Structures are given as C-alpha cells and as structure tokens.
Length: 373
Image (cartoon, rainbow, N blue to C red):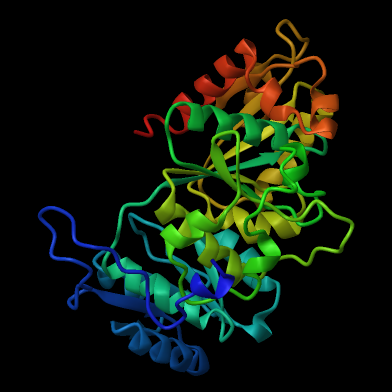
C-alpha cells in the first residue's frame, strides 16, 4: 500500500454505523465557539468552519463567551485572548497566526489549551478536528512516556509497556517521538522490518484512514510501531499538524498508543499535547528529581504521574521522589541487569519477558490505563 492511499485530504474519516447508530452524520445544531477580537484570525476560522460544514459563533472576549462556553461542540480561543471565564472544561484549541511565533506555546500552557493550531498551515487539521467534535467517535488512549532527565530509561519503559499491553491482548501502537533519538526501531531489532516510517508520512494533512495506517505499519513484539529510521541520515522533525493528523488516526485505529516522546523541547511541544496521559520516568536520584520538577513547566495540563527507576531499598525511594516532584507514583521500574546492553543489541523485547519486568509493566498499565479490553 502506498503512502498516497492513506491520505484523504478533503474528507474526514467515516465509519460504518454500529448497532443502534445512524452513521456518520454531524450534529448540525452543535456550534463552534470562537473567542477573539482579531478580524484576520476570525476570517481564517470562518473559512475553516464553513469547509467543515459547521456553524460558528464569535464573541469578542471572555465575559461575552461565558454563557456559550460549555454547550459548544468545540471552543477556539484566539491568540489575543489571555483571560478566560470560569468554566468546567478547558478550551480545545488555541488558534493563532504564523506571525504569533513561539509565544503561542507559552500562551497555550498558561490558559490550559489542549491543542495549538497555527493558521493557515493547520487549516486542514482544524477542519477535520471540528468535524470530529460534532460527531465524536470513541478512540483509544494515547499514553505519553518521557524521561524526567537524560538517560532515565523512557524508551525502555515505553517498549516494555507496549509489549505488556499487547500480551494482554490489546491492539497497541508504539510511536517514536524523537527524530534525534537514533531510531526506536534499533532497540526492537526491527530496522529491516517493512512498513511505514515517519519520513513516509511527511506533509500528511486532512485525515488518514486508521485501518489503512494500521495495515501499513511494521510490527514487533506483538504490537505495531512507528519509528524514525535507525540510520545516519539526518531526520527532520515532523510538523505539528502532521503529528496531530497521524496521532488522531492512531487513536482511532488502536486501543492503546504508547508514545515515546523524548525529552527535548521540540518533541514535547510536538507530541505531548496530543496525549491523554503522561508518565515521567525518573531515576531515584536527587538531581533527577530536581530536573523532573523543572520539566513540569513544559508539559500540557493532562493527567501526569511518575515511574521511579531504582532498586528496592534505595536511599531515595519512589514515594519520596514523587512527593518531592509533586506527582502521584504509578510504579517502580526495576533495575534489570544488562538492560543497557540489551538496548544496544536490540534485545529489549527479550528483557521484557522477565518476570520482574512483566510485574512492573502490568502494575503501571493497571494504574495508568486500566482495562483495555
């Protein structure tokens, strides 16, 4: 299957009607609320909403938005808005223009936005997002895994969690979120396994068929994976709009998406905001705890917990680390002899079969994900 068969830029993904359903029919009565006083931004959004077949209500500020906020199918907040009304849910998308620059991401963190759409580049993604908001379809969970400090073992944890979830019978996708991480496929010894990699999805826009995406991805350890190539060739980070389109299809095609985010600012910005929950892996060390606490400022406002890597009886145990960072503890990752060598030799899946690893992964999945089937 070629990459071109995956993309349907003009039409959102549609599904067959299930029992008791009437099919993919948007709710015409549901409206999108846009909060902005910027006329240029308003014009861009009006065109996108019209293309998505929806209706738009525009208000100038937070005070005027208050009565319409909760009933709206989706709320868009312009980059000129810095205060929000009291509400029961966060704004879905912060919308801005290319000229707004990096300030959009700081503003998104300040107001608790779930996503950022930079227009006009993200117009196709936003149109598909608004279409889905009027006709929501249940999807899988996106679980992000990141290191609280360098060398924390996030990739190892992500692989073991994906392997454990697949062992439980779940349909799992493991995603490599760090283009400069050397290629997650090397840790799986799957660099020669045929299937799509991130460069094949460059420039993806509109929507991707979830079933065709799943069929086109390589597999290892009982789960599918999407990796950056494990080669010396330079890897260019995926556009944020591409990441959102791919992860939206992944969410609809898999029960669980385990996302190995990486720790750099760019991977966090590109991937963390599409996660439903986050796990931070941190060694049981004081400096690692301090680095993790600092990292919290760069994370989106989603449910986040810690996995502490260390030996039982360490001076700094998991509970103490979690208390110092200010996050709940989801589990303790065991120090398994030979893990570093297993990573280099592509044998992490073999390490993941050890009883101590299986117990760890099962406990973390139960705490962070719950029942998958």
